Image (cartoon, rainbow, N blue to C red):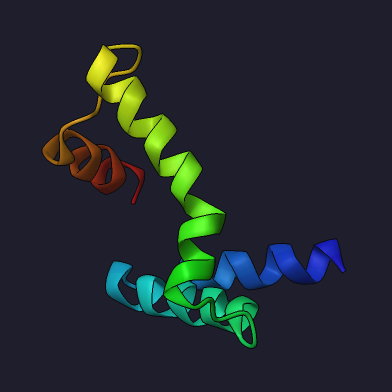
Length: 78
């Protein structure tokens, strides 16, 4: 099975970036099928984590990375 996954990944990496993005989104959607959360369920599931991350940013415990830098690093990986 690992060989199958590596083969698929190798083929997927030959796709243009936009096609890889579409493929990744479709795969993620397939994992989420049947797991749609209501807004209140989503808040219970993710609210504490989002609040923790905002506190970390506000306090300076962590620093964000500008999107332009993230985008440049992603482009360098292609």
